[in-house]
Length: 123
Image (cartoon, rainbow, N blue to C red; front, side):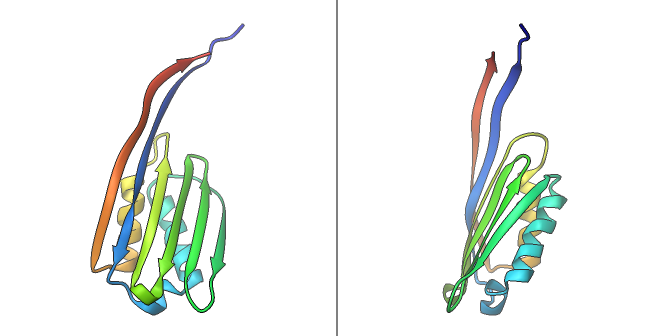
């Protein structure tokens, strides 16, 4: 019988960007590319993505990562978006957020970081 040792750790960054341009927040191709390029900049691996353009405005993009997931939900009429990035492994979620913020140039950024897990499990 083999023994598997794993570390149950993850970093969860979530929050909002405000003071953003209406047209940028409603531009699905721009937002998809910005998020996916930012994920690559943070060293994470994109497995796939799904996006939805809402009517009359708004975009949601979900990106499945080998390391977990990232998502954004925009509110162009309010000039803001919510983001959620959860990763495990060796990628850098803080660099993902930094790269994404630099592409959008918001008026303000609010974020929370939670370090999840911390247990070692053996099977």
